[in-house]
Length: 118
Image (cartoon, rainbow, N blue to C red; front, side):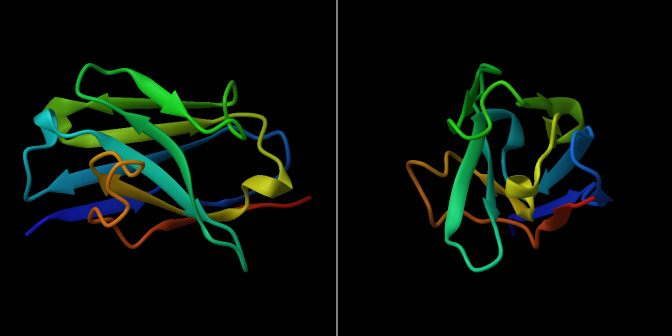
């Protein structure tokens, strides 16, 4: 069974740095892309970033330059480091197994909540 567990969400002030983690199991993590998506209150699910099996990261325009996606295959874990957070980044963040842009129905975890507020 594919499982993904996100963690690291918090209530933070604008401008803060935050790093989310995503631990996967039940699938070949090393040979799978991993994506991050988010859902802000009252809004649709939004693709944020994808890291492929060659460790290349891809980003939505809204987060490019502020977010960095990485992965550590021995630990079956992917990370999303977010800097200069603002209120528009407030959302429930999920990771998915695979490239969400190609497969929006890919399995995802329960999410971790990020609230950016002063």
